[in-house]
Length: 315
Image (tube, rainbow, N blue to C red):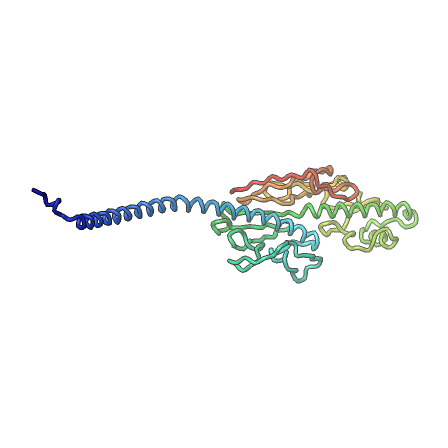
């Protein structure tokens, strides 16, 4: 006796098999979809924090590199104008009432798409820099990734222009004291130099030993020269009240940098710049024998060797 299964025609068996296969395929696809979504969620959860760290690192690095450029530009601005810029924009467009501006001091100016400002005016997060001027110290600050100033993630760079004032003072002293020596050799007996510096300067200019340039009548801080020694007639040399000893005139020292960006020492030396990721920074060290970076030798030429930077950064 044939069974019921044997009585089913082949066509019916094929249709039943096809429906069963479709049911199996549909269930398997749904499982695959669930597994795939789960895997993607796990990968996304792991990748997002890593991506955020990478983006933060790149933004901090770009900000630190840009701050280096801006500090150099601010130093050039000061060398030309004798004053510090009140904003980064002053390095790009000449401010009114400032003489000697020869900028722009930053190359390749472009516009930041998010802020609408120039790229030099904003940090790696497209937020504006904060500029603070206190005496001879110029501070450039970024709020970092959290966007809040005064937190440990701030990026700060400091420029102290005391070294420039010292270089100007030393160069001018060489010129003035050489003129005094030549004047005394020729005219000391008939017209000795006055102990009053303003009068003595007029005598040097009138006799043709100095050009009538106002900067030669004062040091890098804008103060007049002081006869050395004081009260002795005729004047044999002058010095600056901002340099402790006349011996510094020939040493070519231009200042020492401190780790917090401020000038330190009792002889008027000052640090050029410092940088850090948390408000403090290392800087250049300058020697007093002409071998340090940025020092000048006896003929006024600049030595570039021996310049070292120590920077503390927080990534």
